[in-house]
Image (cartoon, rainbow, N blue to C red; front, side):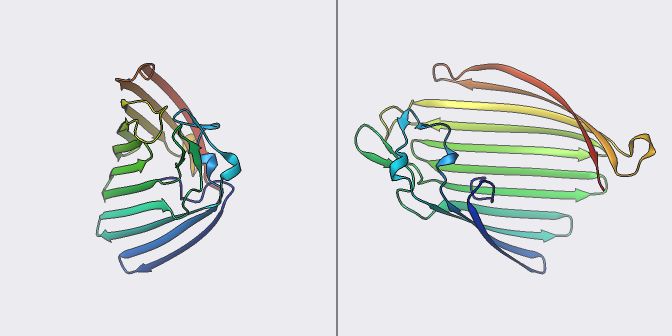
Length: 218
């Protein structure tokens, strides 16, 4: 649910409209989107740059708000067939055939801010799912993200078979109005992430990190 959000060098058109508590949006990305794939490979198969065409990604969004609760749903997909292709070993395969879905819910009350989100993508020889929850309370933040990626050797001969999962927990704290300066905050954050997999060389040791962010609103 990120490939049609308007980021990148391609052109974008977007229309949005509110009807009271209901919000509608239709975003698009128009242009070459082979940059979505790292390097010249997709699951080990070489991307044919000579046959690359402009893609047209559409991303409709609908959201509704009731009191302190809101929910938003979206999907995105490419309308142009064979925009990006690879040589699968058994002929050309259209890897631009990707369809994504997303859902986000949010609840705010007093000092609490609770968010849950879900995203799913069906692509060539793989499906990807992520689920996340996080809570904010008086400057404290705590969250968890789970990702599940399934790979199946169906259309491309070099695709691996198996599953890879990533679990991440993170926390943060905001020091607001530092040194009694209005709108100047310092954020401390940390995370721990681990990937497990039944695919050779996909298993990774745990990754631990931290950061400090300085933010000032002019």
